[in-house]
Image (tube, rainbow, N blue to C red; front, side, top):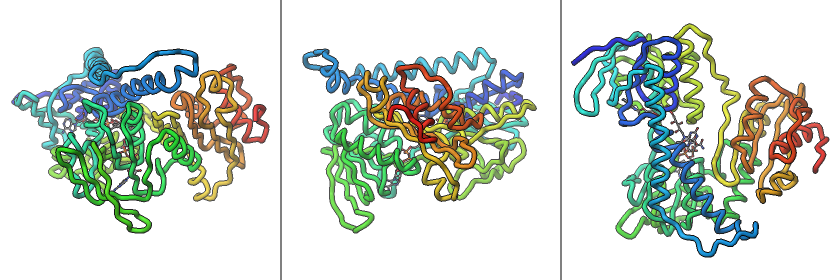
Length: 469
Ligand code: FAD
Ligand code: NAD
């Protein structure tokens, strides 16, 4: 077993780990990054953000061509679909981006180990390389960035054939006749949309009485309307109590949370999308005494330090919003902190996006949250149906909603459902980051015609002076 000494060892090469590794190397630290997947990028690049967005784009093009082209005076004749080609394109997008991370590791002098890392002491990581050989790495700083894994339900066995997780749903080799999605959260709606657009009959079974729990009430209402309009069947306040798979499909038993009424449902494929759990197995955390919280996430302080000296953690494995950009911010802040700089993450300004159509993007407080905390606020709202660019593009569903502090007009939250919401939200994130008021956005010139004008109008509406409604 050979021994290597580093200033920082990162276990996990996802957005939290690889960003921390690169930033620490930029700041002059000698860094190792260990990942057992064989390719860097973690969940996000390999089986998460990137493949799902690639398929969302392909399926959007297909649906747009079938449903919308004719409205623009474009005749296509009959359209065909080549799932194998769609999947191959997705794989190529993933491969190009993961190669990009390897290039960045090389460029910045990060030593990349393809293997499984285990803490054998607070300053020692045993790496079992994919080829089987073992290496011992030592460092006074070890970062755990091992991310998360699919959560499942008791009595439900994910076989990735009939009962699939998001990973299986990203690689189906045919369009299922019927797809039941358990969980009306982000994965449920994104991957449900992919397969519905390609022709599957999709039913979403959600335990709570709403889709996208935790999001602003107007967003939830709009998305429920939009998904129903797209012929996605919704079974809210419903739980799955059993699922039996055979050669023909899956037989699900459902129970109403409110009445207890039981029904059965047959599905070609079932997608389990009920959340994710921290990935900590095999890391040796118990041996070295790293404390976990009651849900199994690694407990850290504001500088991502665990209870064990020299051992840190960032990303999905510490909980909070399970988002790639949140993990990246944490990785960056930790690297800067280790290099003696003031690394910091502003959790009030982390956006969240759902890449459905219409798209959803939110940052900051929800109206429900402000009410609960007794904060006085003003609301400004503007519909995309009154936005000229949205009309030109034929994408008028949705709105921009701004919540501003009643005392000083400071922006507390922004919620967008509509075209390009995921890009439009950046303006709102900056506004929250710099402590801007609704008046600041209202007085900023926005190009015409652009979707961004909806933000300006919503900001003006906070003061009851929107022009175009
Ligand atoms: P991960 O990306 O999970 O990376 C951890 C890595 O550590 C993995 O490669 C794992 O194999 C490795 N590892 C684990 N244990 C060991 C060990 N002992 N030794 C070595 N390596 C180990 N987020 C967004 O912001 N936007 C999106 O659009 C989005 N879409 C998503 C779609 C899907 C279908 C899924 C499942 C998730 C999506 N997410 C999205 C969430 C996002 O993928 C995660 O929040 C993000 O990847 C977390 O980054 P991380 O670095 O903490 O962990
Ligand atoms: P989620 O937390 O978004 O949604 C899970 C849903 O399942 C919730 O609505 C919950 O009420 C429901 N649920 C839980 N138990 C249930 C049960 N027994 N029966 C029916 N419904 C049940 O989780 P997810 O969609 O699995 O996504 C996992 C994580 O990945 C999320 O934290 C998300 O942030 C991240 N992700 C992000 C993006 C993005 O940023 N665009 C995309 C995909 C995933």
